[in-house]
Image (cartoon, rainbow, N blue to C red; front, side, top):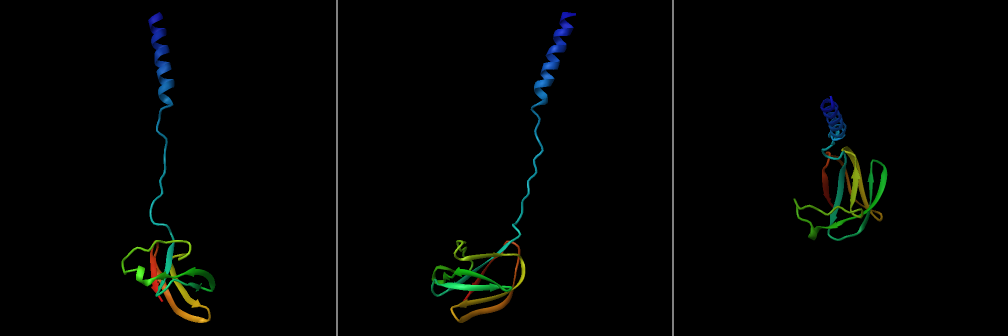
Length: 116
């Protein structure tokens, strides 16, 4: 009888300790961020005003000498504008001079480089 009670106590204790060791359920979301970015290059670094679909952004150009096609540009707050993927009307001005006007399309995760 003592042996049966002791066995029952050991089994019950083991069940209590082992039931707390389960692996929880974890969910992971991955994939490309639903955003695209625009970077503008020119012969020199200077401040520009970019109008995208009627909304103005103040940014800087990246010097062309420092950029080669296919090369990654370090995206900073000063030289990158993040926008939603799709078609956009883009106008770039430096002072009163209009440097660029075009309707463009950007894909999800795309970093589009526009040479002024």
